[in-house]
Length: 113
Length: 112
Image (cartoon, rainbow over all chains, first blue to last red; front, side):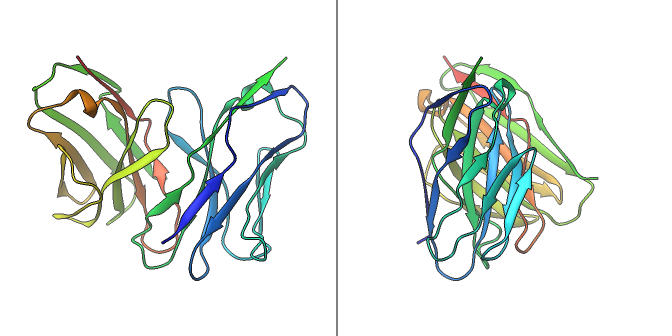
């Protein structure tokens, strides 16, 4: 079946540092890929998405590129802020699954001054 | 635009008591609806999903049940809560097809 693997957290960075959160997936066919963000005490918000190979999703300074050859969708940001502290979830959506998402376990990011 | 509402935001219940959590979606028709549970510091576990009124699929055997009495209403219930039912419950919706899910703000359930 489909699966998503994310790097273990927590990730602790200083403000303005470069961020990479690794995500790899296993799936049949051609899934769509997503990053969700969960701020403390809140639900999940869709951060960005990519629906086919080589697509780059971007939002709020975050980017991720759908790499079919390496089955990866790593999340990056050039300069993190304290307000980016949250848990980040990588997820995939395969066709014919009633829009059921397969989530990674989440990576907690802590940004300090 | 579409919105999703969950309530209550926080709930404290004794062991053995019943439960009813409600989720409603506005601004769309015939959405797919989902209930997730997130244990403290853990990932998301899909509990139930529904592709239409009265159609419920259960992903894991458990003490909970779900119902969809109206097109945009999804209810999570239990007749007798267990300590292990504590967690953060999230409702989500999606249009049919390859569309992402959109989440509510969640209900934090504590069982005493």
